Length: 140
Image 1 (cartoon, rainbow, N blue to C red):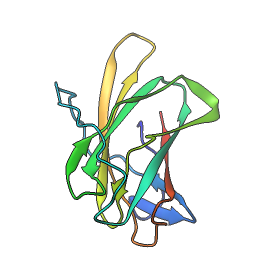
Image 2 (cartoon, rainbow, N blue to C red):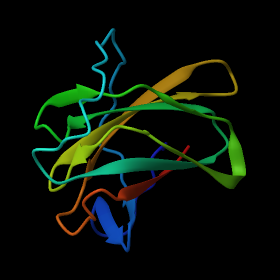
Image 3 (tube, helix red, strand yellow):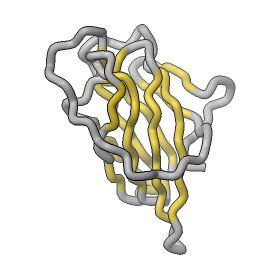
C-alpha cells in the first residue's frame, strides 16, 4: 500500500501532523491545473506539506478547496525512493481550506517498471492553524 494506515481512523491529527490512509485506486487523466489564487483569503486556510518514506519513487498532486472556496488541482510533488529517510515537500503558495478534505493522487513507480495509482482523502481539521502548514505522511 502506498498510503499508511493508522489503527482506528483513516486520518489522525497529532499536533500539526496528519497520517493518512489509502482509500481508492484512481487513474491519472489529463486534468487541468489551476494556478493558486491571490494571497487574500475568503476562508481560513493552511498550506499542505507531504512527507514520503518508502522504497518506491512517487509523484503526488492534490485536489481540494482553496482559500477562495474554489476547487483547484495543484502541481505534482516528486519524491525519490527513500526507504530510510522521510522526504518532505510543501505545495508552496497553495492554500487549502481548513475544515475541508483534500484528495492526494499518487503515482508510484515499481521496480519492474509498472506504475500504480492510489488516492487518499485527507481532512484538514478545524483546529489547523490559519496561515500555517499541515503535514501529511505517506508511505510508498
